[in-house]
Length: 322
Image 1 (tube, rainbow, N blue to C red):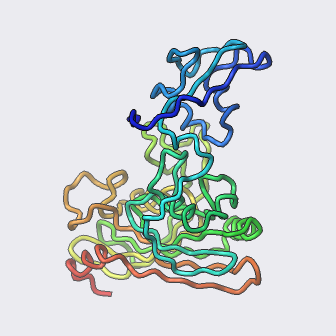
Image 2: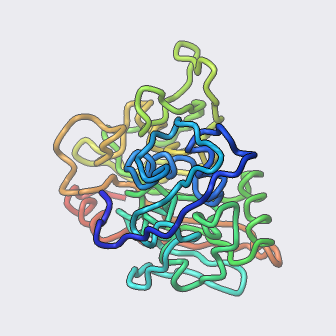
Image 3: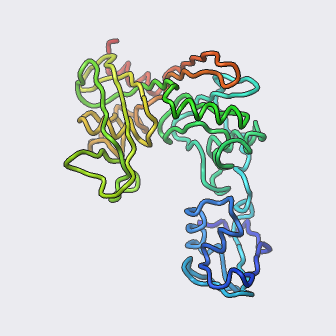
């Protein structure tokens, strides 16, 4: 909901003749090119934009001379993630070119507009403001990859554009080694490999789904995905796995493990409808290891992030024997 106590009513734009008859959402995107389409659509639906003083729908056509105005939280029109110095995230490694953070569970890696103020990107904007200009989007400052909100662990950030480009190339060539630990339901094989392609689930926007011969993609975009795992231990109907994420598709580990009948403990999207999660309020997935070549000199950097206390507590409670 909009905070009516903090508004700005001076942001407005006149529709020029060359934009006669374009849709309202298209016109607003022309005025605010740094905002993603989804955020503009959301703001119009929340009646933050008006045409000649009246609320309008995103598909309404504007006329030359119309006045399109914004009235909402004053920070919303900011062109970059608002700094949030109060956020505390552990720094695992830093030099002049790169930065590696240990993201806590429950925090989004980035937002989509200045309305998002509690993300890792807001932390970066506060402590390394120059990073806002690095990467493909100011809303994803320097972020070479991402982690789900509930996933904790290592996240790699480039502090310079040249470093960003070189690190992204390493990811494309599958030269970056990413190791995760997960606790899953069931007693898994000692090791295994999952290679199902993935596509967005049109029936549920929160999910990815595996693509097989019997469940095709039907025209949807499909990503090849490869996940390898090794069982570290098992107890009380659950297995602790070390996972090598060879590719980097959204929700890859979660969707792959669920597809073979071993969903991650605490996963509310891909997991079974059971209440038991051993006291967790998040899914048990942690980005524990990261290995890559330094973008400046090629030196191999290998980093490790210990399991958060709440995950250690679960393993101790289950008495998982490694």
